[in-house]
Length: 125
Length: 171
Image (cartoon, rainbow over all chains, first blue to last red; front, top):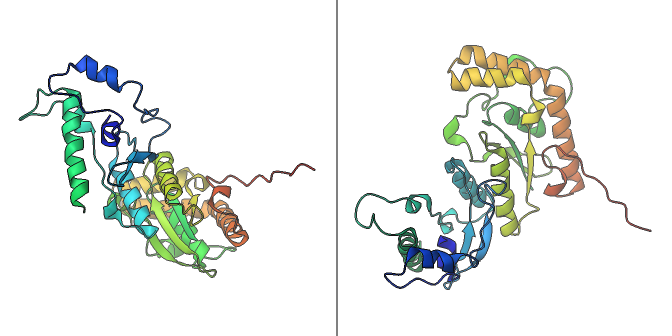
């Protein structure tokens, strides 16, 4: 969902749009993978954002720390800049967090997160 | 080419394989427990170093040799590395070699005792003895890797210990 919003595959919904309508709009346009089973650890390229940033999916499973370290260090080994990789953990946004906005719908929470990520990408590392 | 020997904790089998590759341990003849325990990296790495390739040296052909611990996440870790190098278009730069299937239960027990239970005095020699029992298999693995490197057949030809299958061209 986050990657699809980032790439503009799903348009941000107007304030007050019902959850079921957001879900209905999203179904069919999101290139869902098979989840954290056979694809766990695989970087899946979904597309390129408006600012030229490549957007990937990474099904990480429960223990994701080692995979992130591994990807950063392998990139370094191959002469790439590890800081060019921005990993966003979407898991916390899938569950209501305490504090402001805790009652937001799932779609709205992810939308806000994607907006923040896009602004960060624009600012650069 | 970068050769990465990987195992569970990059403390035993991958260390020995890398030293065999680099010529610090002989490819024939006996090896003692003291020799193995005397290796700087043997039974030393901890979990904070997992996922980080550790440079061991360069072989005679100029290939860089690394060791890597992937915990119990070998399949996911390999998918992460291979998908990354594929996206970067550098698939001919890394050769991955899993050393874990080459060692037996004794090395695993020794490693568990040393690293998980903290019983280094018992675990370290036990792991070393297990390695000595598995030395032929490790030597075979290293020989196979070096043969593939000299043949420049690329990383996809030798993964998880599988041999390359030559496809016959139709006449």
